[in-house]
Image (cartoon, rainbow, N blue to C red):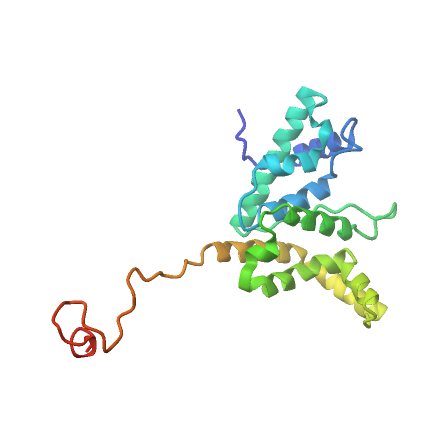
Length: 229
């Protein structure tokens, strides 16, 4: 029997894509690009999220409509999650699955991918900004790429009456962010991994001894004249 964590082959990715686009899942499940983006965030966050938290979001209520098909779909999605998680942990990175915006295929839909990643981040409890604590500004800087790709940065600037980039500057910044998206996804994973590894501050078991206090060794002398010398 194939291991549950075995990477998906190209044929299995095609099968997963076809299942997601077929009835009864087509109108209820996320697209393959959205599932991948959401799972990149889920696999990167401050604490592990059980599949019961994100699988219903990925597949919708139709997952139980056909027991055999639903089981196959769940198995493929779980393996995709394990693959993404392993690739990020090994710092291999994840190549975003992107669909064309039009029939010509000249532009790719980064906005949908960015929205799905941010949705995956929103599933965490506590929220990412809360969990980041004193490092929330660093996190916000990393997440800026997604708000540029989905257009929220531009919308917020215009709503606030702030100046925005010229079309040429905007296109140049978008191209840079699109090219660096895999690196940004990896950086966010590494951000949370580093934060989880920060040791807790040491707690003093006994009250601090002042220099003029009696030495705790019991000599009867002041601490500064005894063990504190």
